[in-house]
Image (cartoon, rainbow, N blue to C red; front, side, top):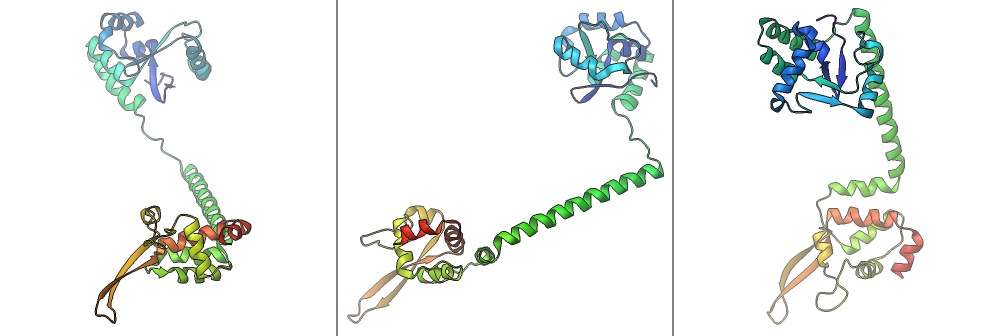
Length: 266
């Protein structure tokens, strides 16, 4: 078992026919004959890999001098057995030696135990882990610094509105936008919202949110009632900007080019 050279293909450990025969103490021809007689019991990609052409050349190059017996050098077709394939062959051979050696292969070759590190190796690994952690923290701090720089001074205020659950009037939104350095009043903001499809332009529903704006949850409509001088109960409907809407519009104004905003608002 110790003489078997470790080889890998497709991300898993595999064995050549010669290696498998060596482990099971039989001739390679016996492995080949059992495969030919029971071909329908083996599934390529599951029990074995068959390499030819460029795939075989790449495999030979990757193995290099590790295959000391030289069986790969002149091979034009190569079959590599997976753990499941090796298990099938141990059953077909049926010898005590084959069963015994498959258990050893499974434990020591296909599922090797982690190497026991020396104290110095453990210290080296611990140092590398600490260095990686420090590098990750430094990268995180740098990224956070960049975000703070981008948000200062205007963006921080806009981002803080995200947590707000209080809806405000359009006039209140205009004040928030002014606090962020963009000159705009209530009338101009109403006009901008209508021109850009957020509020209805005319009719009995004028200044009510459009369907698009409601689906985006930028506005809500508050209904109220009062009794007029004639004793008639009147229903009122008021457009209010949600917390999400406040963030959306403030960020939209901050991100837009000033000349573009002026053109749309005038």
